[in-house]
Image (cartoon, rainbow, N blue to C red; front, side, top):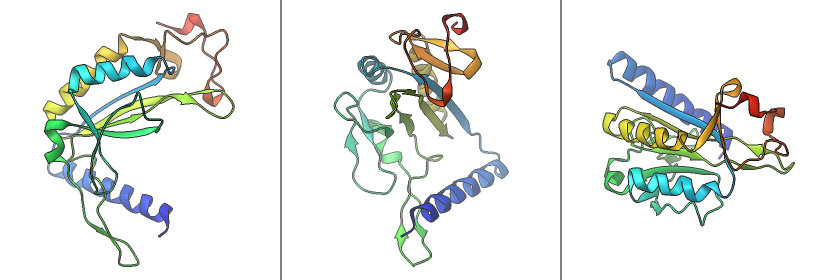
Length: 189
């Protein structure tokens, strides 16, 4: 099975679903926050997540079991998260690959899922930007995501030049950032 083809197939299906929903007049709410954080910030982020959403579970990209989310213990870089009470609302689409294999990818727009990519250091020791992202038709879930992002933003400083947030725990005089970014104290708000 060709992974690139699968990713393209899923992206194409997502785009097609997006276009169908626009034609139907369905409201699509998109929320995103990009940030740089340290290992010490993981606990604070997990606490805010827990405060707003309660118990979260990891949702697999393909239909299998879900797992309790524990960012403090896991080194994974990408999480798809769902509230415990919303696990029943997760939607998977059936797709048939060119070789006849049936797959069931997660429908990110119809599922109340929060995507979380952790900020980390790459092999060169540079900080890599993380993000939280939600694209949903569910207004109640979107409101919770907005509340979470608002609380999280209060713990970070904004860098307008890069439209990203940066942890107060990052020493700008010694920190290296991905994409050859240089962030100075004067750029923070």
